Amino acid sequence: MESKRQQRIGKLLQKDLGEIIQIELTHVTRGAMVTVTKVIVTPDLKTAKAYLSLFATPDKRELMDKIRKHTSEIRGKLGNRIRHQLRAVPKLQFYQDDSLDYIDNIEHLLDD
Image (cartoon, rainbow, N blue to C red; front, side, top):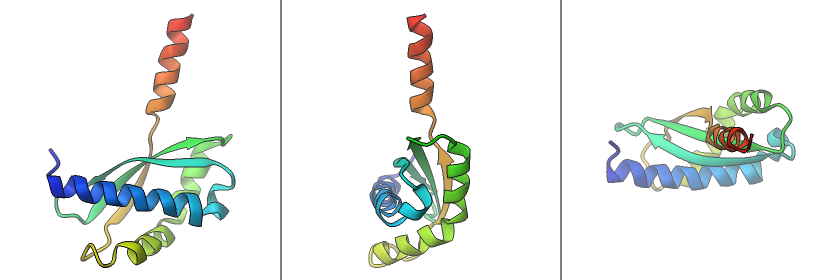
């Protein structure tokens, strides 16, 4: 169970990562819509798992690979934003959030 501090920091990271990916990384996303759905921070605040929802892209796996290749750039930009709020910038891990695809698949199966 996450502490209140972990939840607050997760929300802060979610907001900042969303802005960084949508505004400052357009050269990586190239028109795809990327949303940060959740960020889970470890109790020691050294690692953050960010779950991304990907839309309007033909190859989601390729886009996730591109985002993972730019992790150090994203972490640097994040560090510039949160340097006065956190002592250390957490190590970032990106995962694809496929919960919307799962819901869509369930609805499709129920319609049939």
